[in-house]
Length: 388
Picture 1 (cartoon, one colour):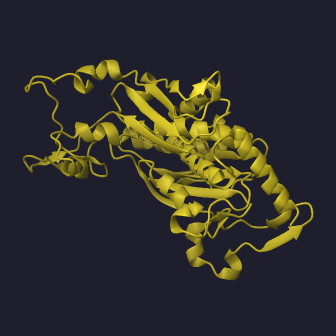
Picture 2 (cartoon, helix red, strand yellow):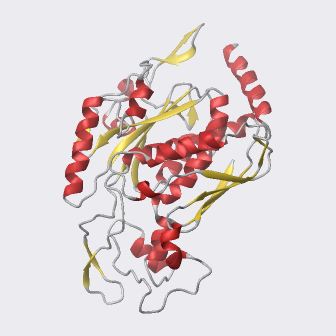
């Protein structure tokens, strides 16, 4: 599947177009709205979440509840548009010069300074509106379409937060715990450890009182992917490379690892690589998963484990030292309405973009036209693997 999004943070809405999406996929607005609501949750979110209640409006590509194979288009309306119409309406000439908003104090760590220079813009407003993480709502919508197909194929994706600032979980999840996902979803910071969750919330509160922001990290787990998605034949077909590209496309993400990736630099080969075993019931399997389910750019049949690090949000209520662009005088960075911490939300966005890339790799191997065709080809491939 291919997709394109457009829209501004305070414009009329966010729109998306999805192409190369299989026909015959049952689509329910309620499922997409549920995923959009998950993105809006999370301890540390700002006042915008009290305004918006994201709902998708599907415009084309779905009929009688099923995808048709034609391009899918959708819109997520911004409720805050009514408060920004005079500023953001593309059909208005603009406010009088004495009332026009001119933002010239760029925020360190944001797209403000390079964006206004690159596009020769007169105000940072024109950078803020598109570079805002509000755009990730459209990505979650696209990812929801991908997830419907993955669910049908028995592939599950979930995420959890393992660090907020210096508060962290010191061990990997017990994936055999049947209540694990319920614990994650019931936590305001998406942390399955109740005691650690409370400490994370307290850390967010502490930082908020100082006018600051805070980052953290999260993990995404994919269960049920068959051996052989992706390829070693070309650099841009390697699944780990494509997943990394997708995750790094989420605003404020600064680092990514697959499996125990960062620890690999201090390990030896005998201690790091996952030895291969075989049994009649399990087929080829591993007793460890340091590779995070990907070897040579391809899935190896184990769970895919992705870690991502999110920096503190650049917009702070206290502001930071900067330079006014026209005057070159010292200034304090602009103070837009913002979150204190958005790591839990970013984890949900991460699930969405991972789902998109997984569906792409599945369509490349098993067909792309219809859901039934993909399922038949996948089942035949599983039989081939079982009979090896």
